[in-house]
Length: 633
Image (tube, rainbow, N blue to C red):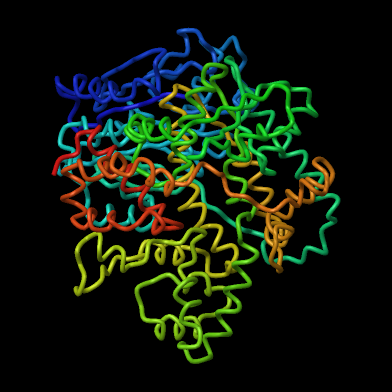
């Protein structure tokens, strides 16, 4: 795991490019405290900060040049199957200068070009410069586990880095908020790629590459979520065979994530996802420590997960935090975010990794299971959408609350009901603009941006509609829901804060449920193996629960889904309200961008529940992050 930064300038680098890239890398020091490197060649200056995970020698330092001398690469990530890839390429260890995955990936690019990406199992963001073509490639992994930001000047110069904060140190990058993106952040609690909260700074989209040359900047998608067999009949596939293959692939994915030359651990909760990984590790006789988060309530009680210690495991470290510790940690935790997100789990993860980093550097976790396997409330929500479709034929006044709660948008109830009535079955989720999390209602946005009595924002949830329009024409409703969930809640929220919090502690998170082969297998199964037709936990993550019957026991396999209990923000408002509000209101740039923030924050603490609590988390993150990273009014 590392941090990268660079500048591509048509006509060749200039004298101050190295100084600029050095300034950018200063903001990436926690991503790579073990080494720093830079090179200027042709049209590009490439910088790299290294966190040593594989091959701890200096032979794996970056930037790295291919054996043929044509390609130079800086790389942030891990290729878990790098040794298999070496064999596939016909390379012997004697051909290489290091035992790192970096060199093998670089040689794969040298031999195969961008098509080598399909062979890589892992998480990565990278920049490759082709000296012969004078062409730069900026690439991001399938789901966006690793970040990559960029800015293109009017003259064609492209700067890029692993964090939005580092981008603010680059020449020509505006240091002002983008108003529409700030509105999106407060609506959804994240900003969807390619946009960011900073003007003219963008994210490379997950599964995409940017090609930069004398013709400008071109985007190509190298990976696409494809539910190729979703509509087939599950009775044609023996369930026993499906579960057996799932076991093989989940086991392979978990063991792949152990590839490391530094100590490893597991972030453990009482949920089926991390418990499945823990069970496989035990079955494979891989003994690694586990780490569990807890917190103390205002009356001194320990949270349930803190009391349980996550699981009955002797080598479990249970860390619990007071309200004071959580409030104080907001400043360093949110300051270090790659970009602001509004999720209290980010603070909990930062606190947990701060303690756990004393024991390990690489951590496995269960992130991605719900989004890829069809978890959360998807079975219930499918039923609700079917019911809403039927209710749309009745007078809207009879179902006002239901349409308001489960159909997102700024339109009138009559317009929402009419649109749903006309929608084909597979387009019902798109018509409802379904999200697994409720967006902030537009009336609250009107308060935050002082638009009361004025026209509502025309951009409200348009980004979600665009994602649904991007789905395949023959995609089913559940396929559309999951594809949008992967592009939103997973990539922009969970993976963003996961990388940020881990890298700020100079650690690495790995996610077996996002393994290439496991994901491809699940996506080719009939959708009934992900989400069933009836409500209840038995009908979500169906394939994992079928596997769990054998390996976890029936009770654990079908336990009711519980959200990660990171602690209520409402209780912190009651005990530390002035401090929390100061994190937002003491930021001049946030007060200018969100002129109604003070009025909105004047609500009683009970107001901040559900989506309202999420938006408060987003405001806290925005205020702290903006002040720490030098955003200007």
